[in-house]
Image (cartoon, rainbow, N blue to C red; front, side, top):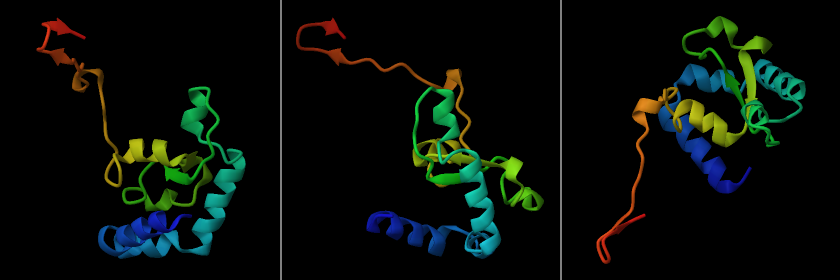
Length: 119
């Protein structure tokens, strides 16, 4: 892990993550469950595999959120190996899962006023 990533994690743990979650993610039980999920998924991002790309998994994601389903925290069927990029898409960075639909996406156009052409 790079020092900037370590600093980001330290900041998140200190100011954003609740104390119970912090203790959970440092527990031996979580480390074992996480490792089992990574081994099951061959240390590959499962979202990227669906898009026919091979990307190493950095994270193990709770399909049903830990805060809402604490009883599923260590259940292997509730864990999914993801790369950092896909995990951020699931959570919109470091928050709740972001729901995106076709209606919320917008087309972008570049308008050039110099010679009245639209690209």
